Image (cartoon, rainbow, N blue to C red; front, side, top):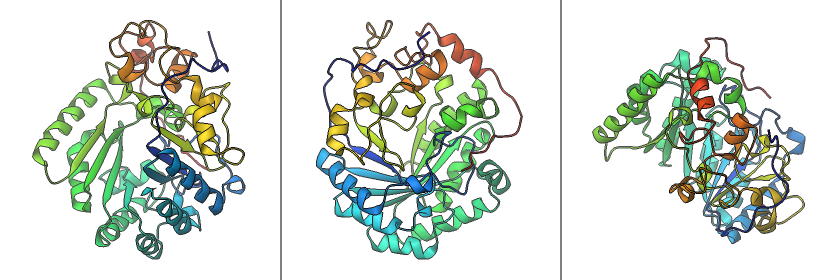
Length: 368
């Protein structure tokens, strides 16, 4: 069994310009969501990039072709220089999206961000029922604070998206969740089924819904899209473990997006560090263009030349790029393998077995 990535670069693939940058400003967060996309090993506050370095990264990103930056965390409001960081992104000509837990963003801070030109806010909401929402977040009072912040965002006429991560504890309330997003004044709602990496992988058995629940939820999303057409945009991410084909993870490895961690490492996707043997370059040491074009980590799985059968002979090869490399490694031990979510993968039985396994134990909350 292969246990890590081959450090040798893959044959040259067509190099696209990235369109989006996920700027993880910090891993500090008051919430403990059991599906958090942050790594299990969190960056320390003392290792975070300073304001000036983020400003340089934004300028270099814009020169590289990036159009939008997602200011994320952790909770980005934990940074006292958040307004300056956001303003630097705007000065670089980037569309700015604040991705927040809603806890820690004060009225004063939100006003300052809006005055500085913040383009969009995305608030995560754990459930439509306050007690359940606070339990999932691991923080009493989180639901009330999120609803209050949403009202303030809308009052300032800043576009709002509600991000709702779906799993066994809330999957039966898709109708109520969309109704909640409408009440909040959101123009978009993301029905995002849990993706099992990092903390979610640790809590997989506690989060996993049944196939019947997933099928009902997918059906409700389609009905709600028709009912609310013109009022709100409903985006939906189908859960991998219940899909027939894998998703084209981040639009293809090293193809259209990149992540910068709080300490400055540049990743092809948020979970890339889960694959051993990859060498990640830092914006502390190299310009972003050099990292995008020449980093061993970005070139490791660019294109499709590394893929085995059945991917090489598949008509979907250049649509889904063999699926997710991190998931392939997590489930097979080989980052080059066909994503086992694909029903054609020789390892698909692993996904079927895991999708059928559920436990009702307590969550392992993300802390740090």
